[in-house]
Length: 219
Image (cartoon, rainbow, N blue to C red; front, top):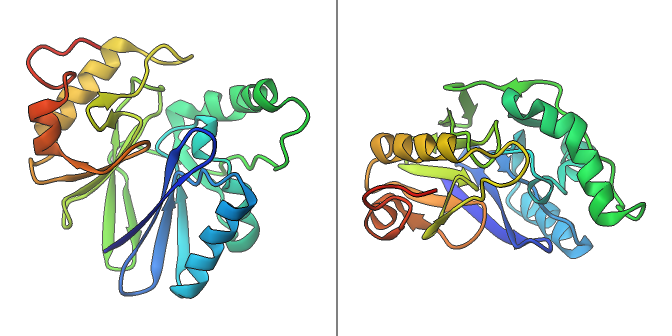
């Protein structure tokens, strides 16, 4: 499995394209905002001769989906987010973007045609990602986990030496603590973590060093 990462947009969000030897790919948290970022994404997909088959969101915050219109335009893929973030995506997202950019936001905002479910299996090429519901940063935050490769895309649930904020609308400290406990129990130590912000890390490192995972969690 090949993972291409870009750090993009004013929030320094991590956009990932995940593919394998078949050429099929999934795009996770397409936050490309600036024209150069959007161009680089398309150039990479063309150069690698990839066929994107799903556009996946770990959650419905604005910095993780600036590029959804680009993916819809070029590959016909609508964004997919957990159903618990439906209200956030459909009702609150347009208001939040208008609050930030006023009338100057340059892109349309595609809305999902279907929503992800907990434990759903995402298939592409010869690989699978399992959807783990991990509320706390948002009601519908999820982690995408590939058992075969021991790789997890954690969005803003688990970050290197940190976690996502719980004081945004829909955030919940207790749910976040439960989600982190689930990840500690569910993900093997050798799991490579690709977060929504920051460098990649491992579950072993986070269990040993992340203050939110060491001993009693205080979220």
